[in-house]
Amino acid sequence: MRSRLICGVQAYDWGIATEFAMDSELEDATNALVGELLDLPPDRQRAAKKLLNSVEAAQFSLDFALEHHG
Image (cartoon, rainbow, N blue to C red; front, side):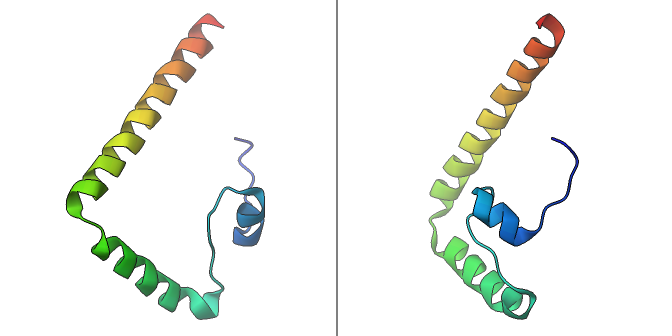
C-alpha cells in the first residue's frame, strides 16, 4: 500500500509469500509448482479461483464503500 518494493526473502519472512527460490533454483521451483498444479483436479482449481475472485470482489466493494462513506 506504500508503493515500496520488498525482496522475496522479506516477503516470505513477513508471511506475504509462502515460498521463494533463489535465482539458481528458480527453474526447478517453477517446474515443481507446475507439476503440483497439474496434479490437482480441474474442478478444485476452478473452485479455488472462484473463491479467490469472490473475496477480491467483496474486498473491493467494501473498500469502495468505506472510501465514499468514511
